[in-house]
Length: 175
Image 1 (cartoon, rainbow, N blue to C red):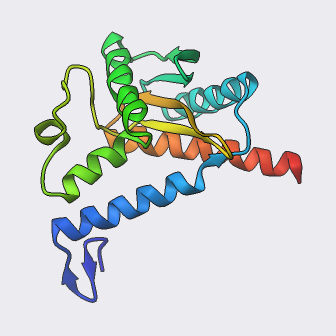
Image 2: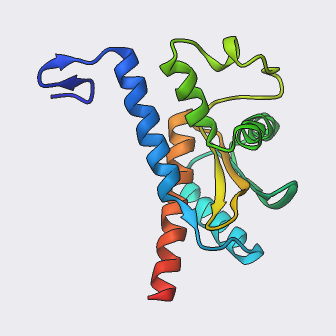
Image 3: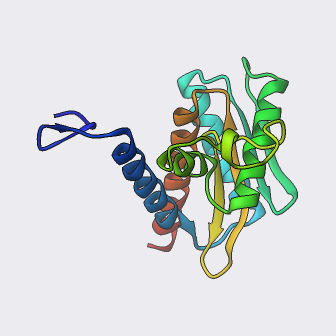
């Protein structure tokens, strides 16, 4: 049985979108950090750069707390276009307080697209995967972490994996 089937029945695109939204919301609920310092931003950036190098991924990475850029790295194969994508995806996180991938999925679940229905300038906002909120316990969303250079689902997955590793390192240190 494939991911698009339930009890032998093919899922509609609406059901797939609704399931995707629930999965993305669960990721965000799970990936709330106990803290986020300058050192944590450096650690998270290093994790992402290391993962990208291991995979030969031509990405740019950006981490912010509020308006302050705490980390930025462009790897071979990335370009200034990736920096523009970072800005557009980050603005979606800042406006909606959730990942850029989740915002796009919510529009798809409603049978439309972000570009067609958000009423926001697509030259300034992109609801494509890769930007994720940095949320801290007791404070909420305080920043963002963004990857650009891969297909959107892969950009998103790389950020999620790095946040999971960072969260796991906190648990090990407190252990």
